[in-house]
Amino acid sequence: MRSSTRHHVDQLLIEQGRFSPVAWLLATGYLSYSNYIDWRDGLIENLDSCFTAPRERIIEQLAIATNYARTLGLSETRDTYLSTEQNELIISRNSQDDINFKTDFAPPQDRMQMDLFFDSAPIYAENELIDAIITHNKRKIPELLDTLYAFDPEKHEDYALLIVQEKKFRAPGLSLPNKLDTLDNTLMPLAVKLLRSEAIRFLTPLWQSLSAELTDYPFDPELPKLHVSYSGMKAFLWHDVTKAIEQEPDYVREPVLLFRYAEASFKQDRELSGLEHWFLLFLLHSESAEQLIKQTGHHLLSDDWQRFQKLDPELPTQFFPAWILLIKPALAKQDLILNGEAEGFLAFNLAKQLSAEPLESTSVALRADLKKLNPDLFRHFLDSR
Image (cartoon, one colour):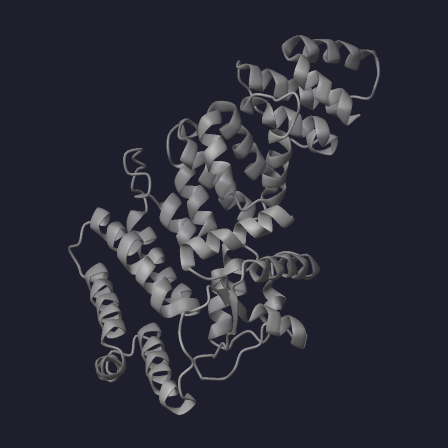
């Protein structure tokens, strides 16, 4: 749990330039985007009532994440979330937990502390502009842009570009590849830089809009991001991701689709489906799996992978699924069916039978078969007993 939670912090810092607990909740699937919007609209009193995992487990992981963020020397800022009626929103009735969930971490700014009165004016102007952009208040945006220009012409230029690029994205006639490029390479980094914690509310509807246009658009290995399996992940549309992948003929041939299917399954609490697709990824595309597992949000899988890499003697990547079943016999009793002729598949099915069988005469023959197939894997099986 510790290593995967730190990985989430690193990922958010890379993608958004800051670690926000609310963004983390959405990225891990612990919070649905629809519940997040209802909360922002003042329809839900306490956000933690909507968590999709036990609250205690989430609190524990958040503590690991915040402690890690502090060791990185990040600066802490307290966020205030306001509803559309400008009422302060509550994440948790527990006051300390509420503070923790509203504490963001970002690299410290190289900036002198200015006079409080004079320094507050540009901050106020920028916050007003952010609110107008998020709420699509087209009447106020030009006026607020002009106000910001008087304080910070460079920042004004960035906001103006954000607004122009959003209009470009929404304009009719723009091709889907150009829409993806505009959103992924221009709007997303700009929004993360300027809108900070509000970037989610700005970007997610755009990703949802692109996903709607990409419905029934076939997957192209040359353009792997131009597919609902990518845009849906960005928009927290986990069901749409799995549905779009299932419509692709023989999608198991594409490593990135197996990865996306697994990750979206985990977000929907379809644990076995997620593991099955991750196992297929290791069995069919071992080299790609080694790269893609670095991006997984499944903490148990990533922790097991780190243990697997430290084994002595080492095992080829394709034996990772078999090794997991051998060290976690309870998992072998689940309805995991993976058929193939490669050694990885043979080892997987032997491990499944061995872990499910009691120590009787039948398991002796299975042990002999496993030892013949891969002596090192057999040795690790014995060490795990």
